[in-house]
Amino acid sequence: MTERILGPAHPTSAATAILRPLFLGAVTFTPDSLLGGWQDRNATRTLPHCVDQLDAAGALDNLRRVTGEVEAARRNMWFADSDVYKTLEAAAWQLGRTPDDAELRAFLDTTAALVAKAQGEDGYLNSYFAVDKPELRWRELHWSHELYCAGHLIQAAVAAARAGVGAQLVTVARRFADLIVERFSTVDDVDGHPEIETALAELYRVTGHRPYLELARRFLDLRGRGLIDGERFGPRYLQDHVPVRDADEVAGHVVRQLYLLAGVVDVAVETRDEQLLDAARRVWADAFGTKTYLTGAQGSRHRDEAFGDPHELPPDRAYGETCAAIASFQANWRLLLATGERKYADEMERALYNVIAGSTALDGTHFFYSNPLHLRTGHDGSHEDAPSQRLPWYSCACCPPNFARLVASLSGYVATTDQGGLQVHLYTAGTLRTTVDGADVHLVTRTEYPWDGRIELTVTTDAALVLALRIPGWASGALVDGEPADVRDGYAEVRRDWSAGVTVTLDLPMPARIVRPHPRIDAVRGCVAVTRGPLVYCLEQADLPEGVTLEDVRIDPAARFAEGRLPDVPVTLTARGSVEPPASDELYGAGARAPGEPVELTAIPYFLWGNRTPGPMRVWIPVATTE
Image (tube, rainbow, N blue to C red; front, side, top):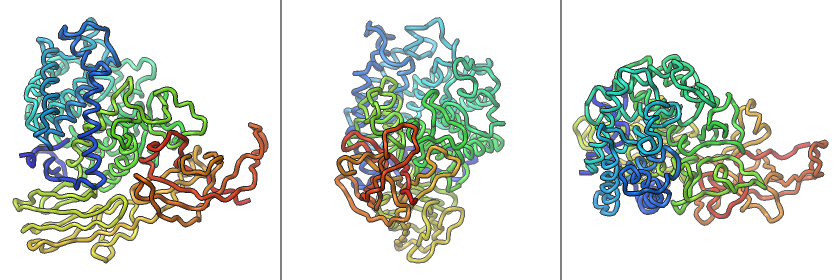
């Protein structure tokens, strides 16, 4: 039964998690809801596209080179095996939801057979080091990504095991994991790219085999001792500059840092290690206190795909990698389970509806790797490192299959339970079936969220259930059944006799809001942004009158917003502004501007930008001149 499939990051009964995830099949999205539409598009467009690209771009052929089926030169990055494994994971989660998809099952089975054939007699599996650099196997972990690729293989196997598919894939992953335990349990070696830590913790959760968890903890305790060759970018880039337990700030490559954070929380809750969990909370506070963009994106430096200094958040140079946003979502989910604190669910929502959603086009087959908050007029988008529009694939193709695996498992992140309670963290139209204290609970949610803040939840159960509804940090004046919500620790707790079925109405006001940046964010001083509910809005050149340059537009921060709509944009926001072009073309003159001319500004949700035509875009808008 698909209802009994465990989803991602499901702690064991012995773990110290405060909240318990539901089974993956417990939640079903209404097809015409935003999340339901995403899942359908992912299943019918994005995931098949990823499968096709594994062949077209050469990732599968790299494995066939190991088996002798292909003799051509290797293509793509040396860690492209991970693209195969992330796609396999997406396929497994999707098959957990739609087990009758014969084409997808065939892909999973045939690819698992290829992976098994490529695996060495001792369990080792890596197409690059098996064929191209066999003499460097395990010898240059600072750049090799060997354990990173192994981690994604293991996570694919975890998804397959939980979905009851791909038994051969599980066998392959366990053989490799056993080799890794044998090889690394007694040597002081650490991989330059974290990922193996959370994967081993999850494999322990599936198998109960304690050495997997112990090795994950060992990897965490070894990191920060200067064991990794920092090479070009130094130890901070690799999170090897300070022991994990002593860290109080995020550093270096964003995806590595956030995958490391996920592993820290997984190990902490399974080993009941409060010191480790405290370290995770400290680095989280640093990341989300001074180093996160309004959209939830992270990473302000292209050079090393890294966090910047506190408040170093330039919108046009934002790297904001899609994989970083997905890693943030996953790390925040683990922290939410571990602590029950709303702030982690708030950050999940912010990343989901802005960066993650915006990374993929409405057609489901074109993607952003980086997610800037400003695309300038005249930008040269000819290179894939900073394109002007979404591309169908990348030479480093980590993001599209990462997106596919998250969306395929998205229903597993909506709600949780604890003793006597059901907590709803993400709102969408759909149904939920679970048990609380042994009693069946049936929940039907009707809403057009995030376009509308009214959420109707009909609950039927014989349990003395406490229904906890997240009140987002952006929501002011929330109502429950028409009365001010009694909010405690970020959640409104509702108690009723649910036996005959009771409908609770949550109203989250969603006026358009002007947001001002922290004064130390120099790059957007004198600018404001527009938000509505969980959505960040932006201006696109496509909505400006002909002849108006986006960088010349100013907004009146006191203007009232009118709501409208466009094709594929359910809610637009329109307000008065002005066009203030420079008085001359002198690059460093007096900075004078021509008198402003009024203009009507129409903003659309950031996640929908770039779906009509390539062109300039900006989130942070300069305010109109008052002098």
